[in-house]
Amino acid sequence: MTERRAYLDHNATAPLVPEAREALLRALGQPGNPSSVHAEGRAARALVEAARRSVAGLVGASPPAVTFTSGATEAATTCLSPLWIEEGREVAIGRLAVLDTDHPCIRDGGRFAPERVTRLPVDADGIVDLDALARWLDAADGPEPDLLALCFANNETGVIQPLDAITDLIGEKPVLLTVDAVQAAGRLPLDGILARADAVILSGHKIGAAKGVGAVALRRESLRPAPLLTGGGQEKRRRSGTEAVAPIASFGAAAEVVGRRCEEAGRLLALRTQVESRLGSLGFAVVGRDTSRLPNTVMAARPGLKAETAQMALDLAGFAVSSGSACSSGKVGPSHVLEAMAKAGAPVDPNEGAIRISFGYETGEDELDALLVEIGRLVTRSAASGSRTVAA
Image 1 (cartoon, rainbow, N blue to C red):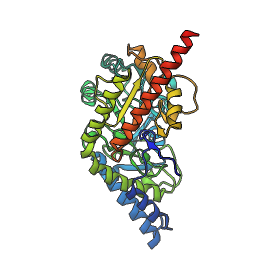
Image 2 (cartoon, rainbow, N blue to C red; image 1 turned 90 degrees about the horizontal axis):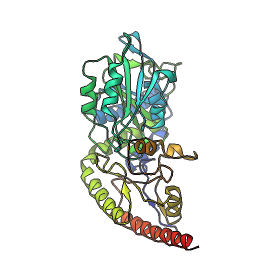
Image 3 (cartoon, one colour; image 1 turned 180 degrees about the vertical axis):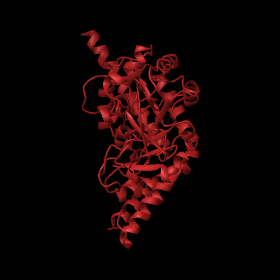
Image 4 (cartoon, rainbow, N blue to C red; image 1 turned 135 degrees about the vertical axis):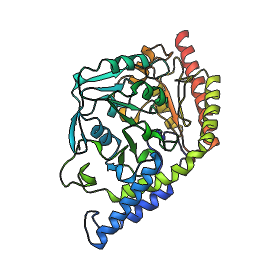
């Protein structure tokens, strides 16, 4: 008998949607190189360009302004460059600011020297400290433009950054803005995001496409980061290397699906509300509860319950959840996201961690109910174990 499992770790990677699977398999049968001019090459190029139009539609970009990459990490490293190009002219970037809770591909500063990177603090809810941002903006000390990069929605907590307030602070200052929208895509409307950002980063597998494909969408083609990969000049010389046609085709198909399903986000929010209510009755505190968060993400902690232990117990019971970012798997130590929030006064112990539950449009209420029943059992066992320890 096959063990029944509930996959509730969509922020790590979303299940492949059927339409993306079909597009992937069809494209695998296409032998042409999209740079070739013969019929097979033109057919491969047509698949890439169709996907480019679909991915562009997610963020309201012009299709020619979308560049495909191997994933969001490559896209971030490309954008976080001390050299950009405007109208064919090289533009040196003076400083970079990131958020202390950002995903490591943003937080680590890309291609900037460490001394030119500022990590901005956040408040107890995980929102950027706007006063600290204002001070960084005012401290500009050269003629070069600066760069601010941030994750629109945090991958661990789901906390959404206030882009309107951030761009209001930037105003007319010579600051470029790169937004990592990897977790927000398909869960929040993004069709107007390029009115505020100069570059937007996306990932295929976070929206149900195949792993191994991402994208950078630019506000305008004439302003872009210097390429990370040079060579054959593919992707309009923004990213060399033969395009991964099959994963790209799956990315386009998934973009079409989530673009439509984003209207169903209210259902995700209703499920999140139910989960948080039940967790509250079990003594859990929701991380970032008092601010805007993704409708599909719950990160919660319970004093005395170590998140890694809870994650392993739930895995054995048939539930795939997380105790933080999948990108940090194998690392020993607390979440840098929880550490930054705790530093600002969040009532969470980074050393105990927190459980992250992230789900999707196909997740059933019955799966979440079963998870919560199992978490209740886990809490009961943990309390009993603690009582025996005290008695001993």
